Image (cartoon, helix red, strand yellow):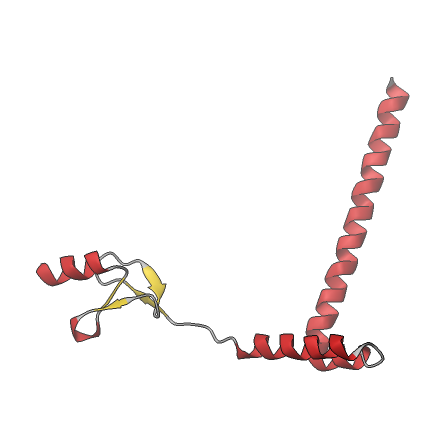
Length: 107
């Protein structure tokens, strides 16, 4: 019984260490890709199929095109919402919903 428990414990530790090793390798690869940027990715894939390069170019372009959106606070309850979702009231005030805009203007 003790031997079986010892073997099970050693196996569990070995699996856990293997998992950590793979995770560290994945993180290193990810950091290398982020550090090298999309140009290094294209250079490494130069010998591959042209369709893969086109997909990488498209993905790099779509990532670069994404811009952060400004966030505004509701003047009635203080909830923060994206500016595109906010309801704009009189005088440029922002609200999270039409009900709060009406409550704020009635007060």
